Amino acid sequence: MSTVPVARPRRSGARSLARDLSSSVVRLHAAFEAAALPLDLSSISTVREERGRVIAQVDDYVLPRLAGLDGPALVVVGGPTGAGKSTLVNSLTGQRVTTPGLLRPTTRSPVLAHHPADREWFGPDRVLPSLDRVDRPTTSRDALQLVETTAVPRGVALLDAPDFDSIDDANRELATKLLAAADLLLFVTSAARYSDQVPWLQLSLALERQTTVAVVMNRVPADDMATVSSHLATMLRATAVPADQMFFVEEGVVDGQGILPAHHLTGLRRWLDALAADSAARSAAVRHSVRGAIRRAVAAAPSVAEAATLQVQAVSELLAVADRVYAGTADALRGALADGTLVRGDLVAQWLDLVGDLDPATAPDLVTDLRRRLPGRDADRAARVDRLGVALDIALETLLVDHAAQAAEAASTELKATAHGSALLDWSTDDLTRPGRGLASQARKVIRAWRQRFAARVALELGTDPAADVERDMLAIALVLRAASARDGHRPDEPDDVTTLVDAARDGLVRALTALLAEDRDRYLQPVLEWNLAPDAPARLRAAADDAARTLAQHERQGA
Image (tube, rainbow, N blue to C red; front, side):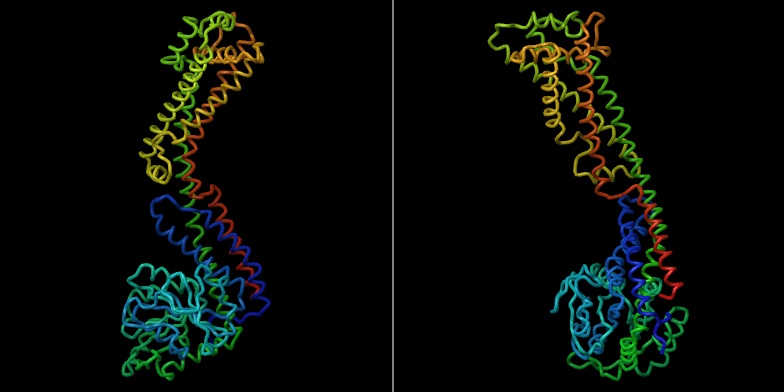
């Protein structure tokens, strides 16, 4: 009896397939993960779902299976509600390993029955590694109950899956996950429901994935057996399901353990026993399903790569809006640091209170004039100079925060007007319509530290007594005010050392404040970094898919 439409392998070929394909599949899996699709672009939902299914199948099935191709074939028993899957599994094993019932949904957590000698093949690092292993009944959908029984022959295992048309969303998702991890799908339907659209859709999807499939029509009334079996065979004629993998279970009365009489399952049990005994045919079925899963991943790559390309372009356009707005604001900030904008309000009032009408922008010899006017015997001179320094720090901080607020408002307004800018704004943990929460305090620290460094340089270059802190700080403040008072910042008769320090003040402040503004702009990168969308992801995915396809084709040509 031919059980699968695949040539029988050499064992060395199976090992070669696993060894060579694993690295290709790992690269393909990584490339799919890198091709994130966070933005709700047009028609993205279908591609996003397919990407998720491919990643899950590679995680749950392909990679674990490639690590153990010689293991038992996992036969997933799946089908629609009320098909009698659990009763079928119990009857095949001759014991109550899973719970059938009238309540729907019944099977909420999967049950895997296997021969005791095959225990090692179903540990947590094997197929379906995301499910916890338990040895007793559970209602958890995150657990896989393992049942050891000698009624299941060595070489195969039976997994009772939830209904794939369950009214429970989580049950349907779990059923899809399990069906994607099948070496063989034992597709169970009933005489009452076999022509329903949903079961046929799921069967078609399994055949598209190139999973080896056997079909069981359950609960067939004896009087209808000939008619129903002929009709189902006609319906399946166009599929890849061979006639000797169609089974018909006559309706019967179950015993107290939910088990059908043994003779109802003779044909199905004989097929499973033959599959378990024939390692070559079993291995061929496994390889057929693994290859089908890899082909599915390869086939999905172009559409996912194209969608990722559109995502990269969209994200680049969104970031370009922020970059353009903040670049313009940085230019405005540079201008404000040189056009007198800074020298106003409380800062000017405290300057006049301390040194009178000496204008830092126009004084012919600012340093000499300032030293002459600075009150030398004023008991609170140091406190007054310190207050002036604080006023300068506050003025610089306010100037930065005001420009950052203008940039945030302008960038967010422009982004909201784009198709996907709101997604960027909503994803951020910060309010991108305003300056960053920590900008003001960070600016205060940076400005204070910069002014201290600049004052030390002033003392060094102007020959100020290191102990004369008040004079040093006052000269530094005056040079900053001159730098901020006019675009050229210089007088023709200004000493060279003063000119050098004025330029240093302006350049240092511009670098410090524009760097802070750039950090505030970088908040727009935070959602993008969380999206994990790599610009080279589309190219990587296409290359990885080509590599996997070549490797698979090479082994198929070699008959591995």
